[in-house]
Amino acid sequence: MARSTASAPVSVPLEESKAAYLALKAKNLSLDLTRGKPSPEQLDLSAALLDLDLSGSFTSADGVDTRNYGGTDGLVELRTIYSELLGIPVPQLLALGNASLAVMHDVVVHALLHGVPGNTVPWHNEQIAFICPSPGYDRHFAITEALGIRNIRVPYLPDGSLDLAAIATHLQDPDVRGMWLVPMYANPTGATVTLEEAEQLMSLPAAAPDFRIFWDNAYAVHHLSDDEPGALDVLGLAAAAGHPDRPLVFASTSKVTFAGAGVSFFGASTANIAWYRTHAAVQTIGPDKVNQLRHARFLQSADGVRAHMRKHRELLAPKFAMVEQILASRLTGHARWTQPLGGYFVTLTAPRGTATRAVDLAKAAGIAVTPAGAAFPYGDDPDDAVIRIAPSFPSLDELEAAISGLCDCVLLAEAEAAVEAAAEAA
Ligand code: PMP
Image (cartoon, rainbow, N blue to C red; front, top):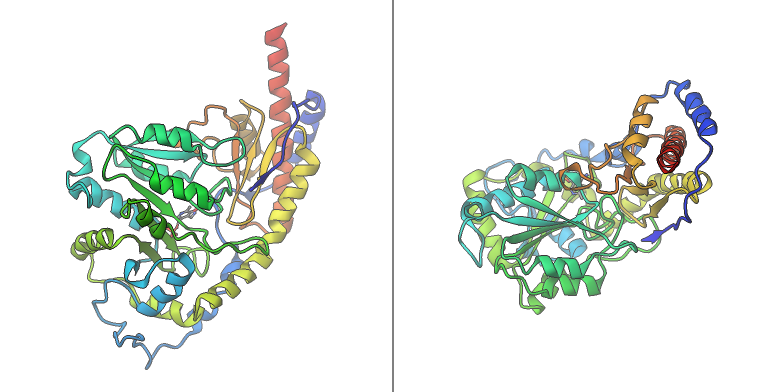
């Protein structure tokens, strides 16, 4: 991930930025940059999924009648496709329901109630904690927060890489049982874990024998450039490091086919998969195999997924390029931002102490932006600086208006803060 750099901010004069903001407000916009949703055009790329006629051909490759109960591991042909994409052997990769977030939630609940391989003491017996690289995915942090687990904020380093030294220190605490991580094109920083970082994460000593990394590879195939790196063999790295049970891998087709109406995947060591099967068997008699069959027939192969994702890229890349172009022309010297090579988000780092104000100003001008602080555990950004931009859903015209309006808000918030600081200093 490349990052732009900012020199010491010199704010635009208050009157000038106020006038720009009033002109923005007068436009009466109603635009939304909040969530990373695919646009209608992206969803149309998978329209054929709904046209597939399965009547008379509803049997899977290994002879399962997809219309009936059973087949709790999911359809083998779809697992085979994702096995190649995620670098996980088919027997260790399950195809499940419509949402990977629900699987993550269930895994945490099962661990709280029953413990995990390596330590069968239920997690809820102790005051446990999760490491949360921040800024990160708000819904990850919400799961652990809602289930009574303490979230520990571990800021990314200024170059966008993981702070492995801080993580190593936290791992000396036996209460630390988990860590959230989006290893490719992270939400929202766009950061991708390197092989060296992954090796270290898998080998770091941990005081808790049952420490797990929730390796949420939601954006494994969501490249925005010609560089299309494959997923790291995280299970192989973990096994080689002597911690085969450490990573729990999640993914889904939510941003490949239909968001919330796709298929999720769970990959892990043989012991973790057996553990998950035991608890999932109480919960369900099997996933929606008809939807899985549709997906297998539509996507066809790992190469089929790659080709399909290039069509997404054609729609998404111009939006990211437009965000970059507007931010560079309006905010250079005032803020910094990420230039992701994949995924769904741009992280804008406004001057310290101004993000909440900028987001409020944007809201008042009809531009909905994810609340400042949302990407941090407990909604607390200690610098009040990070603003998450999700460019996928709006049209190019809407996006242009929204980002340029957001720039007006960032500049006004900065100018107000500068005036306040000058008044305090006087
Ligand atoms: N993980 C990450 C990192 C995400 O950004 C998202 C969607 N915003 C999800 C998971 C949700 O995935 P699903 O639809 O499979 O629940």
